Image (cartoon, rainbow, N blue to C red; front, side, top):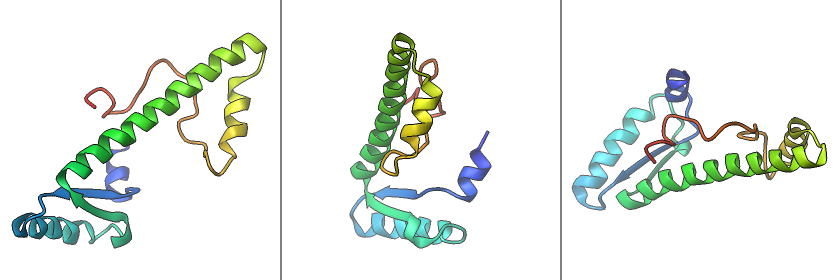
Length: 115
């Protein structure tokens, strides 16, 4: 898998905690630990519920993206278009990007099932 690579070079680290003196202190301890290998600008701190909701929303958006590509795949089958070519073309749009544009059976990833 990619667990070691993901830990060593994350897109971001999201730390949620209670907005109390103890909660902020605990979050800051975690920030200091992660800052040993993650640039501080990639470490985000939020309140507990913002952190939880951010995780769920990120996974929902990824699932929607996979679902959209699967729908596009069905449209390609009906029209004779090649879904790989369509995915490559739309992935070149900087607003969209190339990730998660492969048509597949269902969803994947370690968190989709539980989230």
